[in-house]
Amino acid sequence: MSISPSDASEPSDASGPSDRSGRVVDLRRYPVKSLAGERLDAVDVETRGVRGDRLWAVREPDGRIGSGKSSRRFRRMDGLLELTARYDGDVPVVGFPDGREVAGADPDVHAALTAYVGRPVTLSREDAVSHFDDGPVHLVTTSGLAALSEARGGEVDVARFRPNLVLDTGELAGFPEDEWLGCRLQVGEAVLEVVSPMPRCVMVTLPQVGLDGDEALLRTVTDRHDTDFGVLAEVRSPGRVSLDAPWRVLGHTTDR
Image (cartoon, rainbow, N blue to C red; front, side):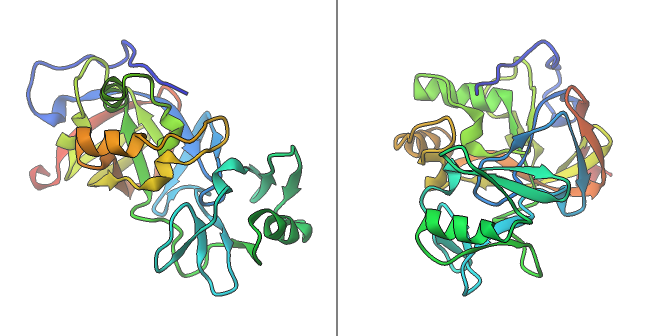
């Protein structure tokens, strides 16, 4: 899905980031890490992040978590992005490419996932080790997405980047989120602090629900924006965020 800037954000003549504001145009949550998620009309943002986000994972017996890449904590499991996950109450329901859905509370879910990935795995809830790669809340902007699409020579679907929030930045050019590092943002009822750029990896190139693989996309991100796209934020004040909720940059933390 592509998301275009609207008239909701009016750029300020001021050069600083503290005058930036707009509206939330997309909200997403991923009940199971590395599976396709769900688009929502509202989310509750807690200290950990969006409530329920990546709270579950496909896990190997040695504790490594299924992902699109391998590392000390993660094990690459091809095809996870082609599975879906949505919440039914507090437990996710996993959807398979053949149309089957298996509830996370169903003991058969472990066998179904094992058969799908071709190795013994279970669907497990987060324990002491966080399922997040880098940070709790992931933001992208419509301006950044437009800049990347222009560099790519065609629309880039925001779903490839698995954000939690997409912020409309109107007619601002380039990547305005770069100016927000160290700043606090009021987004709906929540206050977030932008702490780092979001580094990209091979996951953005992989096939996922509704999208074919795109091996050139990571090169585009690297050439246009030094492998980063979007930003990571920590939660300074929890609250509810709804579609079309206002957002604004409150200023740099050193100014407060």
